[in-house]
Length: 151
Image 1 (cartoon, rainbow, N blue to C red):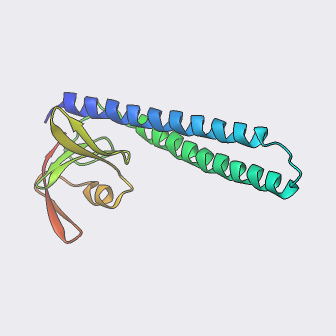
Image 2 (cartoon, helix red, strand yellow):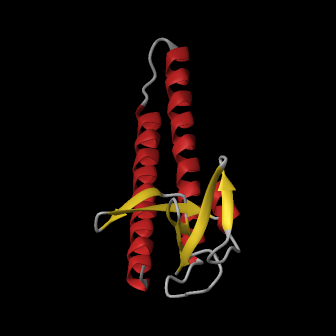
């Protein structure tokens, strides 16, 4: 594994977060416009219900936006150029059962035909890998993962 793979994965995570921010922002604006355009009808309750539903939708997307911004803040704390012998945020960890990029919970990322799993340090597997060195093993869901390489 190389530093260039880690930098490419960092870029993919940035792209993932930016897309989430854009999607949540657009959906929030759409819900707000829907609430604003809800017109009064002779059935006042229907009007109020429609506005309330649109407001709930807007609030849900606002929460998704806040979550995405937190992910971005977590990602910005990582220096993709750093290499250590122990697993820290930003490490690319090859194990006996897959390769993990400890950054944000972006899921499976494919790069040049190889699969990597972007996981948060707060995730169960990420928390187990933190602080480990090559040769150490963690057990997740009753399955052992030996750390083979840390970049």
